[in-house]
Image 1 (cartoon, rainbow, N blue to C red):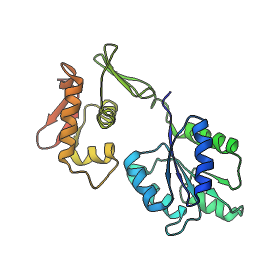
Image 2: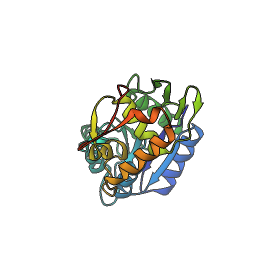
Image 3: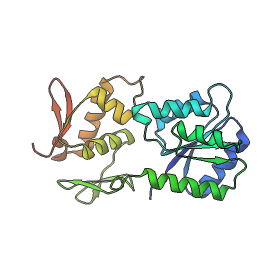
Image 4: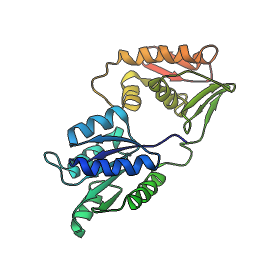
Length: 229
């Protein structure tokens, strides 16, 4: 099973370290940020599976970041657990109203945190998302992050993998380069639309014949994944 990635956002390094150790022991991959700005950039660039977000931080608060993530289409479904030192009921309510999926009050035990995190991730993974997808002998397994043709593994880069996963789960529809950027790159404004063409070329090359023909160029629009030729 591929490790889930958790972004820890807290301005206190000892707390980040304590959480990171607990999560790594439970086989999670860990990213860290000490403020809301760098946290948002990491969400866009690394697309973690869950964010652990401290309530009180200098500058932009955790609540403000949670609201921003829930407002933006590409991160609206991202699970968030708020970390709060305040036990008052109204803060918990405010945290949940901002879109957080759960909250946990400091101090907490690492075991409790891992249990809550597992529960939120379980709720956040829609049924079928981790099922393998197969088209004409081309198989993509979201759990192991492997792509194979007739049982033979393909060498494929991480961006090409995400592009292929999006295409295979959204077949027979034409997407513009802008739509693909939003869906696959997470709306990162620093990526030019031509970058999509480069990765499409790499993906076709990795797939080889005959499967590269599944990715069709749609003149004047963009690209479509289709088994219909």
